[in-house]
Image 1: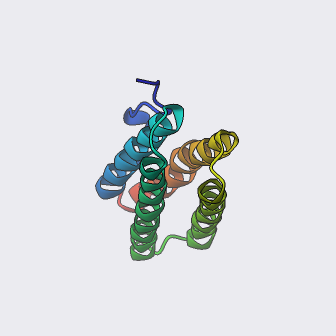
Image 2 (image 1 turned 135 degrees about the horizontal axis):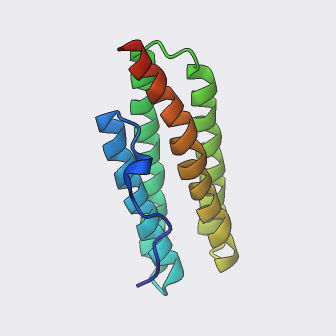
Length: 137
C-alpha cells in the first residue's frame, strides 16, 4: 500500500459538524484516488474515483454555501468564487486525464486537491467557522 496524501487529524476540523464530516470523507476519497493513481489499477477504478470526488465536492460546496447563506456570511462571494475556481480547475485536470490518461497528469490532479485541502479547508473554511463562532459568543 502507498502512503496517503493526507492523514486526517484534528487540525482539519473547522467546528461545523456536518462540514467536518464531509471534509473527512473527501480526504478519504482523495487518499483512495492517490492509491489508485500510484498503483496499476484499472482505468475504470481511477475514472470512478475522479468522478466520485467531483460529485462529492459539488454536493459539499452546495451544503457549505447553504450554511454560509444561513449565517449571512459577509465573505460569501469570495468563498463561493474559491469553490467555483477549484471545481473548474479540478474538472479541467480530470477531463484532460480521462481523455488522454497519462501518469504526467497525476501530479497536477493531486496538487489541485492538495491546494484545496491546505489552501481552502485550513484557511477559508476555518475563517468562516471562526466568524460564525464569534457571532454566537
